Length: 50
Image 1: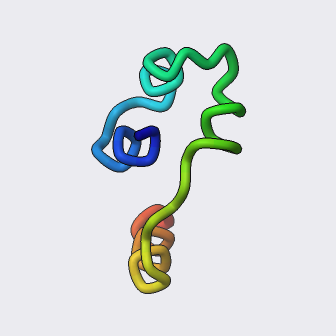
Image 2 (image 1 turned 120 degrees about the horizontal axis):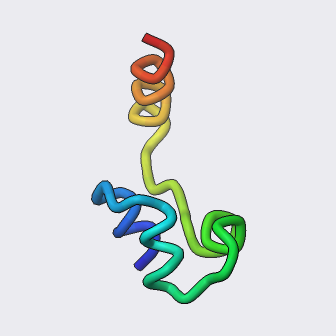
């Protein structure tokens, strides 16, 4: 659920609140999984540096 919300563009803090977590680190470290393939990860990396 967290991965779907964040991948869909929902803010991390809002996702954290919906899940009932007190700390964003809990949300990211335990409940968010990057579901991108290697090509998509690379393209996102390049786009972030542009």
